[in-house]
Image (tube, rainbow over all chains, first blue to last red; front, side, top):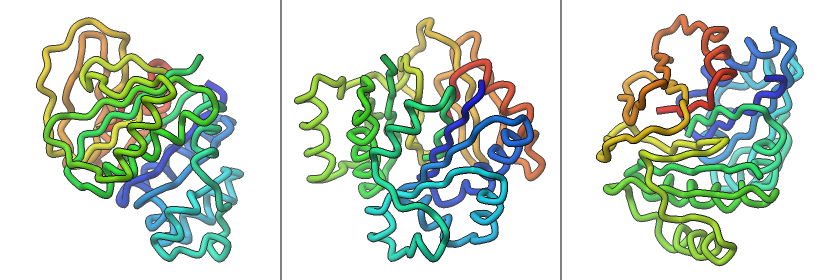
Length: 101
Length: 138
């Protein structure tokens, strides 16, 4: 396994995503995160975790439709605004996907 | 071709609608998509119906058995309330990652179960398990 994809669509699992991402980065795995639904609000609620993911070189993309619905400013959060196409791309890119939904 | 399963075990209509939107989403790069809805899940409304029709139009499976999913990626949209109903036959092994307050279900011979609920989760152990078999998060 060289590439780990993490999907965050739930409100309470950002810590698990961050922990898995950090452990994977320590193994020199490439890690990408796609957030949607309640996962976007979770990102907005923990800016420190988002910053730590960025510092670790983890690419974080969030669904702009979910962000608009939740009133989350992704640019202010430092998270790339994406779409379901990024979700599909993550699934195609990763050797393994762990989805917290 | 990659097969991606969206398993819906959820009582919240908005979340069910999002799961169906995700199912359409993950089809956008050419993957084969299977959607399996646990009886007792909420109705996702008009959005879910549109997504279901779109997936069916493009030949994806929209009536999968949530207990018998075979896929490269399994996204399990789960609120912890519904339990598996079917007896399991043999299928490829998966690793079950069980969140705090959630019950694991549909464990087949050869599967591995890891708890994610404790504050000191051993993420290295989880990664080893994930590398060995596709994960399903309960």
